[in-house]
Amino acid sequence: MGDFEIKGKVAIVSGGGGVLGGSISKSLLEAGVKVAILDIREENLQSRIDELSPLGEVEGYTCNVLEEESLIAVRDKVIKKWGAIHILINAAGGNIPGATLTEDQTIFDMKISDYKKVTDLNLDGTVIPSLIFGEAMAKSGEGSIINISSMATYSAITRVMGYSVAKTGVNIFTQWMASELALKFGEKVRVNAIAPGFFIGDQNRAVLINPDGSYTERSKKVLAKTPMKRFGDIKELNGLVQFLCSDAASFITGTIIPVDGGFSAFSGV
Ligand code: NAD
Image 1: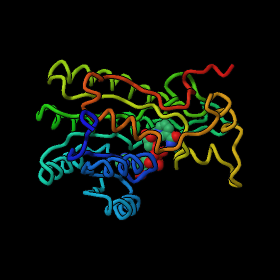
Image 2: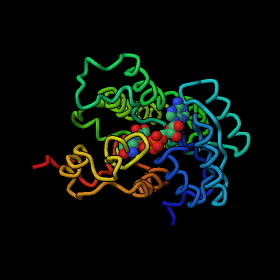
Image 3: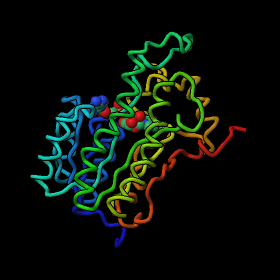
């Protein structure tokens, strides 16, 4: 495998109890990476650890990505156990119901407290872990941080204003942190983001799939603007994640890479 080899590295995956973080954790374990999964929901975390333990070395930590102290505690435990942190996947995030407008609401109906919750989770929930775990990478002189952006950062997608604003913040943070780390800590600590198109997850299932299993009107619009005419399979993120974690990506930092079946490339016409 040469430059693509990631076996033996140590990864932190936030939100690993969820759909995308769980799938990414599984693929990293299968590639021989040791994985520490962080999630705020203890029951999600425990079922994920039970599922993944047979595949390799995996540890679970109940942790809120917005709490500096609990992140520092996890950082110290992981370094004590496995000696280093090479990879950080910031996959904790997603929409929250109160910040997702219903069809008949306008932006003026959104509670500002819900807007704050969604921007805190999706922006600060990436920035704060990047600072805590990125510092360990900067000290050791090696690391790859991968943030999760969104299609909601290219042009306006109705109903999810707070989420769009926060994920667009993640984009500039990715570019900013990539520049900062390369300028001040050398070229071996890299920061990139992946921008998934539409994958069915807990956070968006209700707006994409009707209770009877059929596609919602919104789903049909998404598929009409997706040249590949389908939703993504979460496994389709894994190749890019592994590549970005490997030395094969040694000159790649500060990028935001879509994995979207062409959604961001196509005008819909
Ligand atoms: P998900 O809801 O299945 O998983 C998110 C996980 O994060 C959950 O297990 C949740 O408990 C955890 N979490 C929430 N708040 C946390 C906190 N404060 N601290 C620690 N953990 C916390 O969502 P998903 O679909 O797997 O999405 C993961 C990421 O990918 C999110 O950033 C989401 O915005 C992004 N994304 C998803 C899609 C998609 O189509 N599913 C598309 C684009 C981007």
